[in-house]
Length: 131
Image (cartoon, rainbow, N blue to C red; front, top):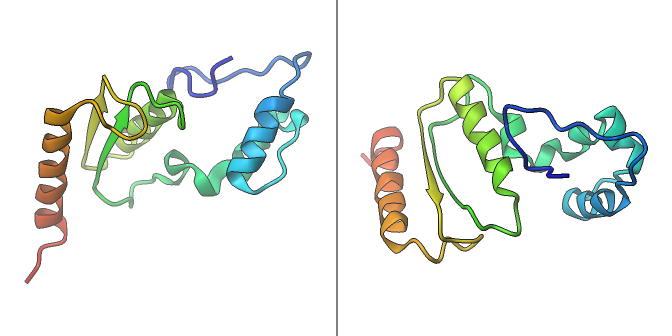
């Protein structure tokens, strides 16, 4: 089962499956106790909200420039697609860079990383100009 998954397809948890490993990981990541049953009820989402960028996006969110590595092992790439979907759905001006050869450190896409940095500076000039 892929927690990152397709952002257009909700994750369904089998009531007969054991999610203790994922529960332990989410507990460590969030600092909140996550149990097996929380995956079946969806309650885990509220416990994870404070560390999930995608869950905080609304129509008042700030313009955003983000980059994610397709080979990221620290955060499932599918979660970044959910963030992109939330930005689009709420009409937030954003740029999304998918580093197709990189992991969490964005280390293997030098040209695209430079583009990402240029776009970040451009957004800062537009939305937070120095006067």
